[in-house]
Length: 195
Image (tube, rainbow, N blue to C red; front, side):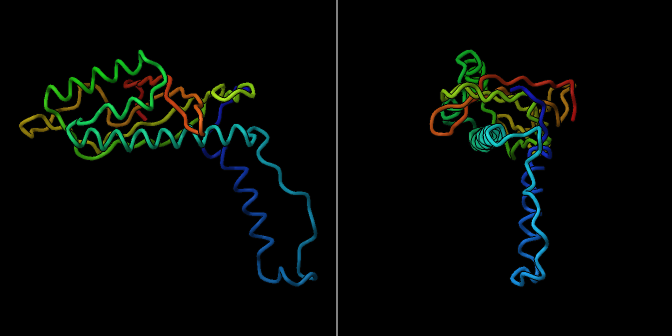
């Protein structure tokens, strides 16, 4: 199933259920006379089913882990950059990342701070067949590098590439792996699309 999702839409079903649960726990809930009349349980948003929601949440958590580990690697002068390989499912994509890491080490660059992502949208969700690894999720995020300073080997600030905004759109296509982990199949940055 392929549908467009936004984080607020994903949380809509959970919010409806939480409001219903709070109503049941309100003052006087122990008194049967004070209890509101029974009504059908609210159903999740018709555009989000539980399997898709779980897939999107798992992919987003892997992306969060990727950003956090990436900040640690770059803040340490790109030492131990090889640990980032575990996030990539596509060798060609990994080789491009590897070349970037190797160049940063050769240049003696390091960073301070961390990039974050916001405004997550699941633009495609495919729960696949019943086989593990068939699930695919495409997440469009706003990559925010405003908190990152890049320094050269002398400690001087490296200017941002001309025309690249601090916040820009990045699209990640991700697939399920074993044990609930997800991997990055592709990463496409649109540095002309500020967010």
